[in-house]
Length: 118
Image 1 (cartoon, rainbow, N blue to C red):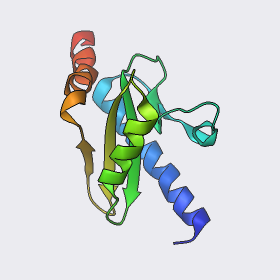
Image 2 (image 1 turned 90 degrees about the vertical axis):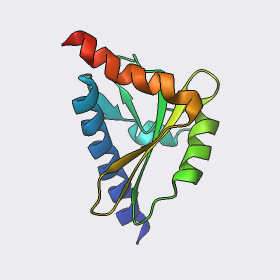
Image 3 (image 1 turned 120 degrees about the horizontal axis):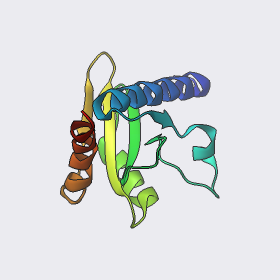
């Protein structure tokens, strides 16, 4: 896949993941966009607009995305104050969450916030 096509597919995957997280949590999520490429200001691939989340989400979409590599990247980029989580989606398949045991409580909080708001 060409570089531009691959970037477009990645951006589309991030938009899909943000829409899914918005539906799941009831809070609007957006992509990190071009600022994610900046060395000076690291942001997750997707994040909630209200800043309420303790998670750092790395999104990978494509033919057999490498979730292990993505998790290493998320751990590195999340630092000590965020919990790394990876969302992957194989072509023509559903989204899968990869959540390390150390991130489970932050992951659960994403869903509890919506339930409390209902």
